[in-house]
Image (cartoon, rainbow, N blue to C red; front, side, top):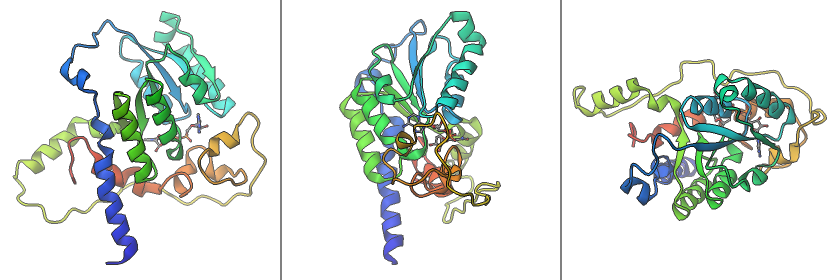
Length: 271
Ligand SMILES: NC(=O)c1ccc[n+]([C@@H]2O[C@H](COP(=O)([O-])OP(=O)(O)OC[C@H]3O[C@@H](n4cnc5c(N)ncnc54)[C@H](O)[C@@H]3O)[C@@H](O)[C@H]2O)c1
């Protein structure tokens, strides 16, 4: 077998194993399902507010008892916009909640009033905020894909276990009832033994976009912090919000964004 293909398969297998973060719950929570009552308040902080992190937050805020007390983003423009958006939400207006704004997630994690964080940063910034949040005693909802390497996944799982945190990887699609129905149908044996599975994405994901020149870092952006663990390079808009996912330095395109997530389904199709 081609060495790179063998490595890929090894990585995929390890990823499926290490991605058990999706279902990690501390023993005492499993043993005491009533540890949290409906009357409890969960104070949430959002790290990475632009797109999916914001969608996660607004969805969570629909649950009574959830309040957002902190927002963090390295782009001040995003941070200010989301602070204004948050203040306009009817539930926030009704309760008079106020969110503290942070540009450095490590400062947010020092806030003792925060119970849980949402990590809505690009993929290259999933591991460290998750590990540090676990160390700070916060529960974590981290966007998919879990991370960019098996080593990062292992560190995240180890931190969640060590600090006994409740953790979940954000995979909205996998919570829809039709996915569960499809899995149950396959498992029921009604279509016999499955020997081949073909998957494809019937969507315009990864359309090409024009190459643009590097440019000065936009005002209000802490670009050093946006790069974080990624290689240093000049600012280029194509590598920034949203489209970072097409570059290996930060993500892995549709393959890691969607394909690998199949292998970490909580109830599993392809495990
Ligand atoms: N957008 C979607 O439809 C979608 C769907 C599913 C999953 N996701 C996942 O959600 C994550 C975020 O995707 P997105 O599309 O929202 O990206 P985005 O680029 O639109 O937003 C990411 C935000 O994180 C901020 N950020 C970057 N580094 C940071 C740091 N160190 N501290 C604080 N903030 C930081 C950025 O400034 C930006 O505002 C990705 O992992 C992605 O795979 C996105």
